[in-house]
Length: 338
Image (cartoon, rainbow, N blue to C red; front, side):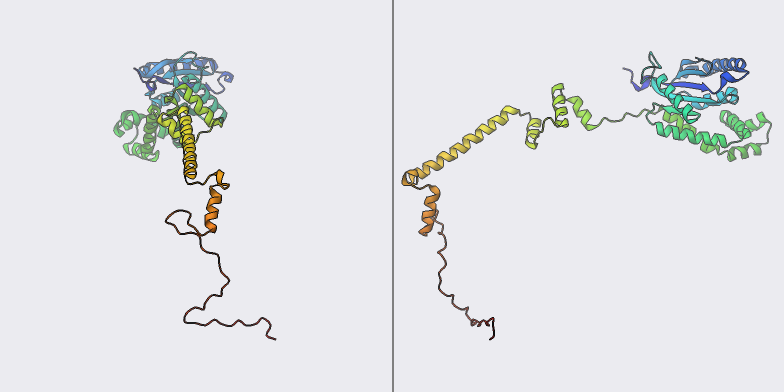
């Protein structure tokens, strides 16, 4: 079975700024068609839907997640991007039909990203990826580095990126080797290339975020238990701690009713045992006093409530207390010395 992440595609939507108002619009559209054919031929292995012009100011395509974005943008800038400003939207999604009207499609995400780039005035905006913020921030850093380079540095870096040899760059551009080395160092090519490699990896990155614990438990429950959980969450039904433990242990409401009946029988049995003991001891209502009154009568006589236990203390007498041994009682001073 094919993984769902492998079926996702990258949609590309581009808006050519002010192309319809240029006097050389027909010539530029001819150059753009030739560029689309060149791109489709160069990157054939990673293209799912060919680059095509859909209006006088827009073109689109669908590519694989391993599409070499840096090589595509470098070719586009060299052949066409210098003459016409462009807003590009790149979105990740499924390649289905209708592609542009259904949320979740790659063209739907790419058109939304292009609209955002047009509103904010950005060159490229990414949308629909697992790490949108990281990708957009990293590309913004790359774009700022590219804008800070001179035209000579861009040309040297473009040739050096393809060949990887300073001698080849110097011979192709008819420049001294030291000049090529200084230009590459001044443009901070090592940082620039590392940022592009990181961006390419982020475009291919597939992050499966784990579902929250509540959603995972809700998916494993039957439909009726899901409804009960929803009612409890909204406050329609409250559940005690004991009910929750019993529910997790598989006990139902009938078991709770049985527990209550058993508790009632136990209480009634205790009442019957106490009544029978009072009857055997002759302490009933027939003698004119209850169990409590009989206990009070025994307390008044100084008898013990239960065998083996002392009775209540005798009432306090009015006799004076003897003085403590080893000391005499001090005389109190009168309040009024007179």
